[in-house]
Image 1 (cartoon, rainbow, N blue to C red):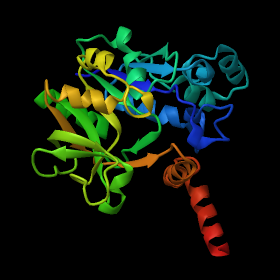
Image 2 (image 1 turned 180 degrees about the vertical axis):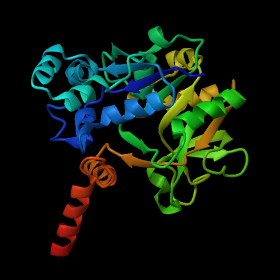
Image 3 (image 1 turned 90 degrees about the vertical axis):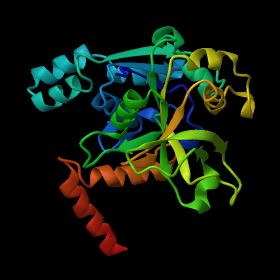
Length: 296
């Protein structure tokens, strides 16, 4: 069972400027919670017990969010605001640990993951979750990360979450090539290659990589030997390609829905989706939508 996850949060979030100039992009809210909290809760739902934040000195707000705030809790308790107090205390369960490590310089996603090596070790599989991507599990009994863990436990293969995209937009993504047919949602198939942003008409499939990985600890020595690639950065894709020569890597086709919160429209779409069914604000938000639609 996979119990650890790495969340690379050291990036500057340039696609979200100016909002991310002083606030980490991961702390921008969707309704009433920052994006990073949704991602951490996704991990917890899948059974993850240890979350490693690969962070930067400018991102202390993320660490503070998951830390205990004694003074604030004391004030809420004194004022009888029990509902808010319980909400703060339950951001993460007591049996889940949040650990932070620093990425000293921006050398790519592969390098960020390598920074977690001292905590994860070379002998244990782990998850990688990109916080730009929100994965919605509405209506599902087990979320997609949990499904990936099941697939890994059954086959021993590393897993990369993919989503079917229209062929005309495949050029925007990393696209996988498969050994067999396109798997059903919730199933996986062995990968034979990965192509980053293929030219239209040359894509090997329409399955795009969307920001969730289950990798063996043996990826760390591979990353340590991976030379800088595109952008003079250590690319995770290059390391996974090398890993394929040593063990199976599979594409897990997701069942849920994703939102790219790395840019403004992605945040807006996620806000619409989550706000309209929010237990406290959903009804009022749906009324607002009706009002603005009637005024359009």
